[in-house]
Structures are given as C-alpha cells and as structure tokens.
Figure 1 (cartoon, rainbow, N blue to C red):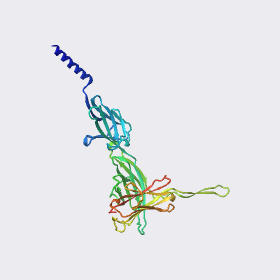
Figure 2: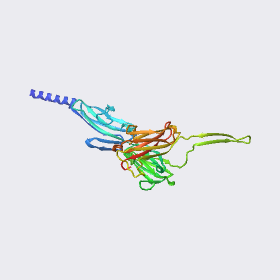
Figure 3: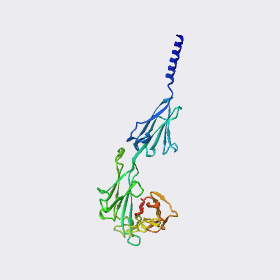
Figure 4: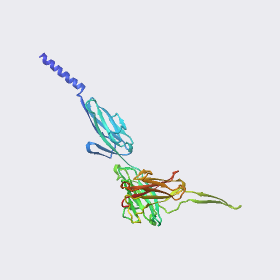
Length: 375
C-alpha cells in the first residue's frame, strides 16, 4: 500500500512539473497580414504575394508556436536569398508606414528557439504605383537630295514609371487616336522597350495636326490607382527671339530708342537619316555591311549643343565597331554620326540620339532609330 502511494505521488509530481515547464517543441511559423492590401495571392512553393499601393501602410504579423517561445526576426533581401540582408526587425509584427516602391521585395519571418532547425516563411511584397507621364518631342525635317529625303514629321514620346506595366492612349483634342484610325498617324513601341513607352508619329504634318495632344497612362485601376495624363500643344508658331526696340517720346526733342537682341535658348528641327538609305533605295540593312546613323539638331546657342547615344535604352560609347563622331560645336545645325562597322545580328535594336544644351534648362530632344533586317 505504501509503495502504491509513493508511485502515485511521484507520477503526480511529474505531471505538475510538466505542466509548469511545458512540453518542449520546435518552432512553427506562419505569416498573416493585417494592414491595407490590394490583393494576396498564393504562388508556387507556398509563397504568398502581398500587393499594396505605394504610400499605404504595410503590416505583417508572424504567428509562431513552440516551447520555449521562439525568438522572431524579420529580414528583407533585395533579390535572391544569397544577397546580403537589407533590413531586419526583432518584433513579431512588421509595420512600414507610407511604404515606398524601394521597400518592395521578399520578406522573411524566422522563428528560432534552439530546438531543431529554425522555422522560416516568406512573403513577397509587390508595391504598385503610377508616376505622372512625361511627353518628349522631336522633329524630323529632311530634304530631297543625296541621301536625304523630304519629311516633316513630329514624334511625341510618352513615358511613365509604373508597377504593374502601364498602358498608354493618345488623344488629339477630344479625339481618341489609335493605330489605323488616321493615315497621318502612327502609334508604336520602339524595339526592346517592353512597353515602357509609346510613340505617336505625326507623318508629314497637316493643318489638323497642330493641336493639343494628351497622353493618358493607366494601370487599369488596380489598387484603385487612377489614370494620369499630360498634355502638349503642337504649334507652328515661330520662336520669339530677335531684335526688340523700345521707343520713348514726348513733345520735346527727338524720340529715345534702345534696342536689345533676345536670344531664345532651345533645340529645334531634330532629324535623322540612315546611310545606306533603306527608305528610298529599296536596300534593306544587311549583315556584314557598314551602317551610318546621322542625327542633326539646330541649337541656340550652338556652342552649348551636346549629343549622346543609347542602344536599347543603355548608354553607348565609341568603340572600334561603334564609332561616334560630332561636328564642331560652333557649327549649326550640329550633327552627330554613329558608324556601325561590320553590322552583326546583335547590333539590331533601337538606337537613340539625345541632344541637349550643356547649361540645361531646356528639354532634351531624343530621336529613336530602329535598325533591323526590315528597316
């Protein structure tokens, strides 16, 4: 009898100890969201995608179990798991007020109590935004001689930074413009831009083309992000530079006159041509040949004119196969040439000539030229 009582006492004490200390268990973790969100989706490998609008509050909670209680750490990497830690927090809840696009990425919740392997879960935060669109303008004016060809064409280029990718539409006045709606209008995306921009080409300007143009940028109202627009007024008015005179007179003596020459800084009449000219010689661009792209711009003052070249949006520097030359800075109009020696398939793409004034203050002119086997 005494032995049974003793065993019962030991068993009761064991249960009380187990109740006081708890059963040791490795950590588990899952991520919950409690802040503002547009959408939460499940992706492959059980990763969640949390979509939020820029400027809203991100709030993620790491729910953990385990005994002893696990220590929780939030970390963020800006890409692959091999990249160095970019941010960390030791709280169960991760809260970011007024989240920015740079704070998007993959966030990890790690729970560790020293038993077994740490428990880790991740969630990808996708920040949606839409910036105000910007219209840049350049003009091509050619002549009917040698490799030149007559053309008076204006290119309106619209670009806006966004996530998800932006959709563009154009209006002339209240008229919605689309490809094929007007024989004098062409709407296209340059090669390799992946929808980053939309160009409106007004071919051989007509009287009705001098109007107000609107570029509308939209992300299709995702996250309740409203569309944004910008306007540009195309006018055939000449600039206001020239000699101005002020004349003062009264009934006494001769009038007093003072004159001043007003120089309006600016860039005008951007144009390009290709040699050999595939537009008029029925001669397509061919592999192994030399191709020259020439870009010409009138600048005031001409000595401030400077050029740069891009290929598929990336800066291009002169090399043995890509030779870049410029005319003297005092010459007007200024011309830059890009000679592609021994054309290769990898040379196909969109080349951009960018003209600007060295002292700034004036919008630059950019001219896109597509080089391909069908150019």
